[in-house]
Length: 393
Image (cartoon, rainbow, N blue to C red):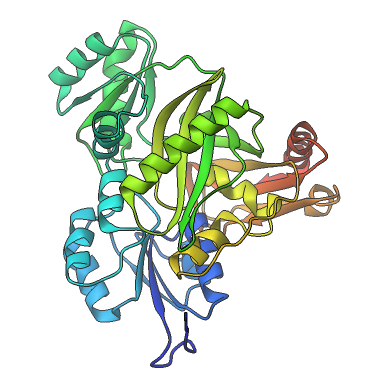
């Protein structure tokens, strides 16, 4: 029998979220629905999840000593990584000491590093992937580009949301892509993966939930990216029954290998009935924000249910839906959004403003959500919302 005490009491449960962005914020809210005390950690003050957490700390999560110090002091029942840039080896050590890392410390370790997850998928599980090579320095990188071939994609092995990612389209791009990878990765300069360009019809995120009753799959989420960062997503992505079955088989193999309970965002390329594995995140996925309007239980609600060992007997889908990221460019610590009365006048729409304190360069600051009779109608709604939105900096 699952039992939760009252928050701040001896019988209460405590969760520490490593990463306090917009995804961590939604996880914090869902945890609090069950009376879980939430501690939010991130590298800057007033991060979105910190604004709704019971307590927060500011530190680099790559600082293993400080991270360990906070975990020892707080003794959380659940350690929930929400970003890539974490001292994952420390989490592995803490799990051996008895701490509960979600979904597992090994899953976090492997997926926070593109080399670990790619070798697991391609070399141990035999999943179909793009051609790839790893490079630890410039000379190895140039050799990898030659071997993989142009065009190719270059990514830091520790990064996310397109940070440090670029495409080598011609010989002239080789040096620039190397520089981008070394300056843009979330863990600093270092090793990269060079991936062969994949000819695909569309990309999907297959949100996969491992929970006490087994494994559940959400309707596939389609999306398009710009500079490696998602701009729009929609659910469901139309696909053949053959491709969907293959995608579910791949998702189950990789998530079973990683283990633990929680939601996984399994990214795949689809070409006809063929499916190619790309990446997996052992936590809610940015493209999955569409589930905040498409389902009765969002990806965040499902993640928390699974983490807490609660049953997930069904997932009710409300209908075709879409999301559009609101990316703000410039330098400002006073971003505001207006004309919301017009933005939200469209039926079956919602908006989430993340509350990030500032933007330098470009940053995802909000998301627009809509439901329609078809995916195309839902997409058109979020585009109309975006056109009506006024952003002031």
